[in-house]
Figure 1 (cartoon, rainbow, N blue to C red):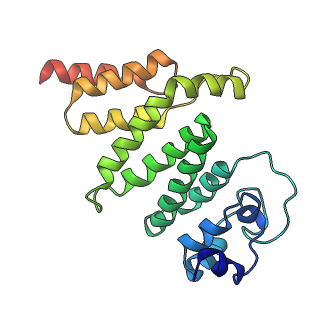
Figure 2: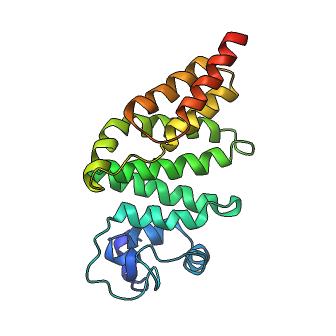
Length: 207
């Protein structure tokens, strides 16, 4: 059966999932039991109500933001598969829209989910590193977009720089940890960059 025919026989999908045109992804990605669980275990990204019921006439958010918000409900170990699938779709949508800040936050979520599984998934650490590098590649543009979006407010901490510095230190690649931390500081991202630099420079001298 063609997907359009299958969807025609499916229940109407409204709420945020319907509003953002995510019905096809929602029905194709998750089983009926998973969809029921996701609805019961999550808060609607648009605030209150159901993910798939109720009419929404307007939202200032984007589809990627909706999915990123949804994924944050599923960072626990049991549910990280749901978070990963949701973040992959969010990444796709943010790339299509060319929204750098959305991608910045999506990669932060990916880093968190992959790094948490590093001891039980042989590919998780490398996936976390890739997500760090993807977020870091966007960092200069994200910094500019952040300042415009938030009226010049100081930059927050940067998940990619922080996590990659931790990973490189754990791998005893102290020079790389220093380089990552220094770059974050130079770009103005908040955090303990000076502490990481001093700590890893000391380890470099003693190695």
